[in-house]
Length: 129
Image 1 (cartoon, rainbow, N blue to C red):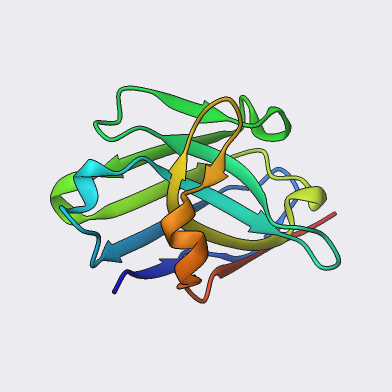
Image 2: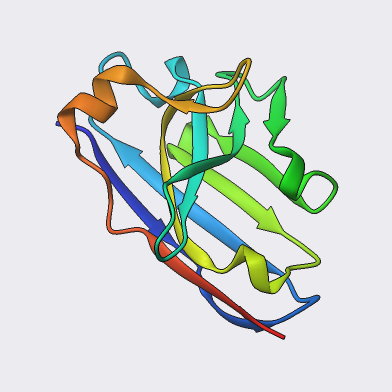
C-alpha cells in the first residue's frame, strides 16, 4: 500500500518562504519510477495541481499561478519530494499534498492513486497578508 507523509508547512507572512517535503513508500517498482506532483486544496475549493516532476527530475512543470515562485525537486535515494515556495501570497494558503502524478498537458493525479484514495494527511500552509 502506498503511503505518503507531507511536512514543512506553517504560518508565514506574505513574501516569505517555506520548503515542503513528502516521503513516499510502497510504490510498486519504487519511487524513482513515478512522476510526482504537489497538489493543494483551499477551503471550499477543489484540489488543484501545483507542480510536477518527472522520474529523473530532468523535467519540471508548474501551473501558472506559481511559476517563478515555486520549485519542485526530488531525491530518489531518499524517496522524497520537495517543494520550495518563495514569494508566498495569501492566495497560496491551502493544505498541500503530494501524489504520483502526470505532468502534461496539465498536472493530474495518477489514476491508480486516485482510485486507491490513499492521500496523506497533508501539510497546512497559511500565508498572512
